[in-house]
Image 1 (spheres, rainbow, N blue to C red):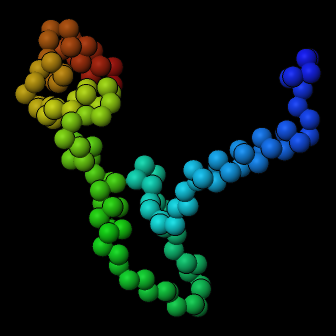
Image 2 (spheres, rainbow, N blue to C red):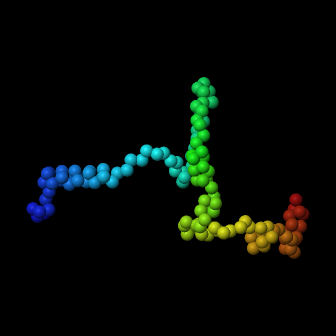
Image 3 (cartoon, one colour):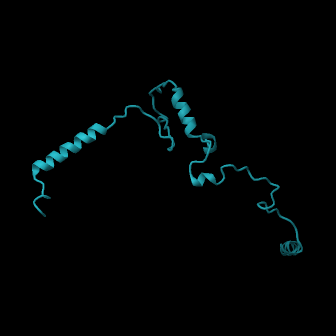
Length: 123
């Protein structure tokens, strides 16, 4: 390495101090709690034999609204699909029983009648 590229202890310390000042300048302290809408919230009850009285927590309307909003179906949450995979089936309707492309009802043909007759005679 050339002498220019080598950093002595003073230069390294100055670079480190500058980096720390820059990080502190851009750092934000978050003090408000909010639930992650993409994860399920599991509330665990107390033990059955616990003698302690349960703590009464007042209902928080904002929390309840956010919780219900997080568990809505994507078509009710958003007006348009956000991803390519949501575009498939975004404007879909449930399949009906009259659609013969997807419903294969049982019906009798000559072959199935013959097979059923053979099954009856064996029993």
